[in-house]
Image (cartoon, rainbow, N blue to C red; front, side):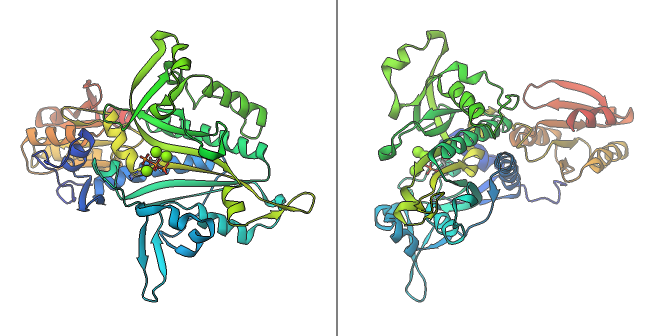
Length: 436
Ligand code: ATP
Ligand code: MG
Ligand code: MG
Ligand code: MG
C-alpha cells in the first residue's frame, strides 16, 4: 500500500479517554475508531492485524481436525429458552424484537445454536466425534466496556464446540484443543499461560483460561516459570493417540498456574521460589468441558452402540481474537509505539522514502515495493523524514527499509529492526531476503 493513497490516519495527541497503552496506541496508530460505547470500526491497519490473528487461529484449529462453519450473529430466543439460558443470561444479552414482534438476540456465544444444528443432523454415535468452530462477532452488553477492544461490547471471537460419544473421547478432544491453543499463542508471539479455571457444578479439572501477563490485566496470576520454557511447536504429540495426549496434558498441568479466583496458597508454597511468577494477566482464551449440560438440557441425543439414546459429551473453546490485538500490544510496545510480532504485523516492512522526487531514491523504493506491494507499506508521502520515522515506530512494522539519496546512489537500503533497533546497510536483494 502506498501511504499517499491509503486510509491510515494517525493521531499526534494522546486521546484522553484511553487509559492503557494498547488503547492509546490503537487509536494513535489508526487501527480503530469508536463508533458507540464499546463498539469499534476497524480501520485498514487494524483489520489487517485482526485478519492475521484470525488466520493463525484458523490454521491451528484446522490442524487438530476442527472444521470451520459460520453461524449468524442474530439468534432466536427460542433456542435459548430450550436450554433455560434465555432468562438466566441476564442483561449482558442484547435482546431485539423484529417486526413480527419475535424475540431475537445478538449472540453472546453459540452453544445452543451449534447443539441444535448438530442435533438436527447427527443421528448415530458412529458420526462422532465432531469439532466445529467459527470466527464471528459477538455482542455482550458489558456493564463497563473499557480499554478499547480489550473489553468491547461487540467483539470478534473464535468459538469451537466439540461433540464426543464418550467421556474418554471428550477428554482427548479437550487435550488436543489445549495443544492447539498453546501453539496458536506461541505463533502469535505471546506468552499465554493456561491456568486452571472454575468448572462450577461440572467439576473436574477440564477448564483452563489462557492469560497473557500484563500489568493492566484484570486477573491476578500465579504460575510456575517452567511453563514459559516450553516450545509447543516443536513438541511431538500424536493427536490421534490418547496416551500421547495424556502425557502432554500432564506435562502442562503438573506446573502450578492459577488466577486469583482459583489460587491455592499451599500448592503455591511448593513451587521453588526462583520459579514463582506473580502478576496480572489478560484472559485471551478459555477452554471448557461441560459434558452433557446442553445436549441433555435441550434433549438432543444420538443412538448409542447399544441402540439406546446417547447424549454427546461437549466442550466449548473460545479465543478473543479482537481482544488479542490489544493484548499483544500490551505485551509488546515501547515509548515510541507498537512492536508487532512478525506473524501478526499489518505489513512485513515499511519503506521510508526520505526524499520523494529524488530519482534514484524513488527508483530504489519502487524496486523494493514492487517485490510485494500487498505485504509492504510504502511511505511515499511528501513529509519530513522525522514524521516518517515517528509514524513507522508508532505503527510498529517489524522492519523499516530506509532509503535516502546518499544510499540510493550506491543502491543501498538501511534496514532497521523495530524490536531491537539494530541497523544494517544492505543491497535491495539482501534487504528483501532479511524481511521475507
Ligand atoms: P471476561 O472474563 O474477560 O469477561 P469471559 O470469561 O466472559 O471473559 P468467555 O465467555 O470465556 O469470556 O469468552 C472467550 C473469550 O472471549 C475470552 O477469553 C476473551 O478473550 C474474549 N472476550 C470475552 N468478553 C470479551 C469482551 N467483552 N471484549 C473482548 N473480548 C472478550
Ligand atoms: Mg465476561
Ligand atoms: Mg472470564
Ligand atoms: Mg472465560
